[in-house]
Amino acid sequence: MKMKELRGLSMPDLRKKLKDSRQELFNLRFQMATGQLQNHREIRHVRRNLAQILTEIHLKEADGEAVAVPVEAESKPRRRRGAVATEEKP
Image (tube, rainbow, N blue to C red):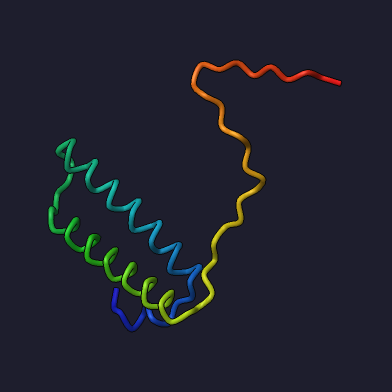
């Protein structure tokens, strides 16, 4: 993918491409580990595309473009491992 193409994409589209590229890299690494990967250069291409996507995301964030950050719901207090919840029902 060319950088010109990436510059024209919005942040949600870049985030989607980032997720897809990471999934593709995972799949290629898995294929390589199991001996099913035919073309080892594919990993290089995917890693390069991933770096280009990340670069464009960081450039857009630095320019002040609105970043879509998911708002977390009310955070629940963490329980320690092995602790049993003892909630009383009214």
